[in-house]
Length: 454
Image (cartoon, rainbow, N blue to C red):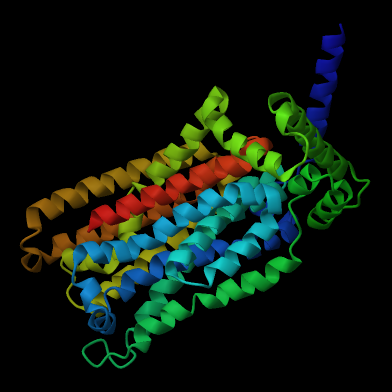
């Protein structure tokens, strides 16, 4: 009888929660305009990531860069590592971020990543890797459930925005001094230097951003968590939706804390050594606990397949790819590369708006099918006309269009949906370490796929 009463109470609470939930999609983003704007600003981290991915592809094709860096760019292996070193740094950075995100909080981790970002390209990888994990985690924990997918997908929206901006900045600076032998070194120095601008804006702005309410509750700062919920939801503290959401967070945190005490009683004395060992144990539990291991496998494989769609090869080497498909001239190949950026940007927008209504799986499956078809047809055309593109210009343009379709399919599917999926599958106790492993899979896979191209 008691079980029946408890079940009825739980069902009534769930129905009440659903009744109070806001709209999803475009209306949900408008209704939650404040948290949407915070997520957009936090996603400048994604713009940095995307800008770094895109800027080097066209720089590698510039005459003045190749003249200055001839000892590097003339060797295909060294050239591949010059590009892939960002992925290597990002892999190391993201592995370090899981524990930092739990210790310092999502907000401070973003700030730290921005500081690291400014120092150099390998160290930039550390910062980019940290941002790639901390930003979607921050957005996921700040967002109300009805628009959580959309706000996490903002990460990918910002990435493709950065890619698009970098492509067209490269296209414009390519004309400084002319695209040929007289080209100024400013043609490639300016785009590389401009990445500091959004980094500094994010670094200053993140100081004024709120902490994640889930992290605040986990730190015992409940009053601050309620204030953040009130501020982001634009509701008073005594409103039902604020109270229900706070109690949901509190219940999850208490449950995970009790579970942690039961599993690791030897690390509960609060000492620095115990905290370190506890953090390390959270990582090992992701492998030793079967339930967690399944989630790790799902997250890591999702990121593996995201990268092995070949998207990084397209982003890093787009001008070279378009030239190999018969587009002659540096300017034309850079222009075709710019179209890739615009295509990905436009096709990501519908997913950001509607992913909470459509769901994750249909988006991923349809995108994989379209990308697979594009790969197959491009491979057939390349095998047949690789040595004779100049006399088969129509086939070359078909292949180029298929590259754009591939970019569009990735833009609406595996680009944003993969980040949404991995941000949702971990419980709060291991969310930081779990996200760091999934994101590190993304970077390791990106490193290997980028290196293999050359």
